[in-house]
Image (cartoon, rainbow, N blue to C red; front, side):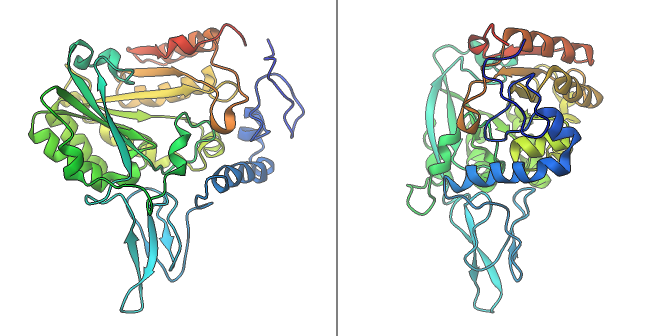
Amino acid sequence: MTSPLARACTLCGYRSSPVMGALGICRNCVTERAAESAPAIEAAHTASRTRHALPRRPPTGRPGATCHVCARGCRMGVGERGYCNLREGAAARSGAVRIRQLAGQPSCGLLHSYCDPLPTNCVADWVCDGHHQLGLHNLAVFYASCTFNCLFCQNWQFRDADPETAALVSSDELADRANRQTYCVCYFGGDPASQMPHALASARRLAARGLRVCWETNGSQNPRLLDKAVQLSLDSGGTVKFDLKAYDERLHLALTGTDNQRTLDNFERAASRAPERRDTPLVVASTLLVPGYVTPEEVAAIALFIASVDPETPYALLAFAPQFTASDLPFTSARHASEALEAASDAGLTRVHVGNRHLLSREY
C-alpha cells in the first residue's frame, strides 16, 4: 500500500514508497542509478550541514595536517575545520600546519551528561544485566559531534553546539559525575567516534571504579582506538553497540554522507572477540528502520553480514520517528518491523529484537 506521504521520485517518477523530500530520490534509484543520483545526494547533505554552519565535506587542504581519529581523515589547511567541527588547521612555528584541538581531547569534551535511571531505553537493554538493576542509574554521556551526516538523524540538535563557545568538560570532571548509584556509563551522541581520546580517558577512570563501560557508535573511529574501547568493555562487563545503518554502500552514502567500509571492518574487528564473553554480550548491533530506504531486504543483507561474523550477535531493529531532514517520512510500520524481524532471523541470526515498539504505526 502506498503511504499517504509518498511522493514521486525525481529520477524515475515512481510513487510506490516514501521518498525523503530532502533527498527526492527513491531507494531503487539510489542503488541502481548512482551516477544520476549523486548531484541530488550531494545537494541534500550540503544543505543539511550549511543550515548548522558545519563543514560541508572533509577538508583536503594542501599543505595541511591530517587527523587520524576517524575514517574521515580530514587534512586541514590553516583555518579549515575538520568534518566533526572539533579540530582545525593552524600555522606552526616551523611554517608547517598543525592541528588545533577545539574539543575531543581529555581536557575538553563537547558533551552533556545525565543520570538515566535503570532500566533505560538502551539499544542493548534487552540483553543487559542493567535491566535488573533497579534503583541504580546509567551515566549517559551525549557527545555533541559526529563523523556522519545522517539525513534521518534522531538526535540532530547537537549540530548547533559550538566548541568555541560551549562549556567544555574535562575527562576527570566527567568521571567525577558518577556516584555510588552509578552502575554503568554509556558514550553515545552524536557519536563518540570523533571524541574517543576524551571518552577513553574518562572510561579508564570509571572502569577502575567498577562501572561497566558501554559505547553506542557508528563504528568509524580509528581501529586502534576501537580496540581500546572494546577492551574496556570486555574487562568491565560493558557492551559495544554498533549502529549498522545500511549494508549497500551506495545507500549508506546517500543516507549518511559517507561510505561504510570502516564501520563494517570495525564491526568484524570487535565482534570477533565476542566469544571471549558470552554471558553478557560484548557486541550488539542495531539498525534504524527508515521507511522506504532501510527495507526488509536491506536488513537481510545486514543480518547476513553479522551472521558471517557471529550469528549469536544480538541484533536490535529500531522503529524510526520523523526527524531532521526526514521529518516528512512516516513512522516505521508494524508490518515493516515484522518483515524485517523475519528477514534477520532467516539470515541466520539467533537473537533479534524490535525496539521502540511504541513508535510503530499501522500504516504503510
